[in-house]
Length: 173
Image (tube, rainbow, N blue to C red; front, side):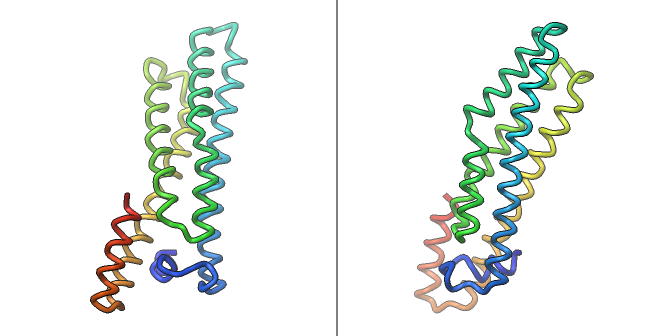
């Protein structure tokens, strides 16, 4: 995928080979899978809240709060959009939702486990899996950007290098 990214960043989708488009689509599918996992985690917190409401109202309220925070953050929708951006070869647009997902999942994981390490292993495992998937996607995207920068700059004229360097700076924002 890294090699494909090095060849795709500065090109339109129509200019890509079928293999390059397929590689971008694989990344996009992984991004959409992460969105689906986040929705599942949100649903799991809601179900847990309902299941333990009578036995442990405090834990039920915490689970419902976390589910609501995930819903309000709209991460799943943002990650789906990032998947669409990857499929359309708009790599720079995919990074911010991935970073937001990592940060929010880490915070929610920390909140959930505070004071409840013995109760929360199953839910924490799901949140950690989603967080790890988000971090992996973010790393893949960053590697794609680096390889693209290096390969494109090595083949460009000095004027093109200046132009590409400016484009790369804008993508990192």
